[in-house]
Length: 241
Image (cartoon, rainbow, N blue to C red; front, side):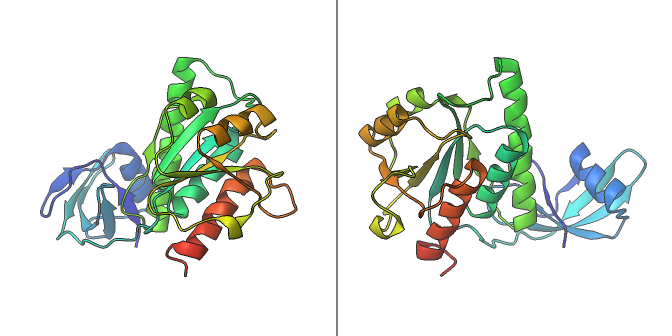
């Protein structure tokens, strides 16, 4: 069943005109017609069986049935602090991180980040990333949209303090997954950009409370590293067991 994110709040019995992206996907791409069903969710928990009741050339109306309180969220509060990478690499990381259950994403600008934008272009980039994350929620069955923070310099973010536990990906770290303790609360994964984090940035992260973590003997690409760790964490303590 096709899943579509609709702006909150949704409610049983509500009839609403579909936003343009939902109209385009359901009507123009999937060729759905009145009487066809889909699943709607607003990212606040649960979902609603929905039916198209009216379709014309420019808009469509849907009716929502009873709320289904289904919960497919991970028991782990995993957060990703990802230094911004270029283009599709960042999109891939965000898409897979959402599929793997992250609850918050913080894009960071580090010493070796190659993406440098002005404020207006950062805003457009954030809108694009949010769209990638929502699409990943639609596909994966998630019922809550992870939080997406504005992009900030790594040093500024570290100075704000760590909420819960944190690990920084460091290919020279002494400890691997076996050295991690079961997280009692939020666990933040800090991953570098294409060129990795500098030694100074890794030291700053450790000073801020992050534990260094090595993912085996091979150096993983920026779009692979955090995704691989998130999968391992779900396998060890999350809902993959």
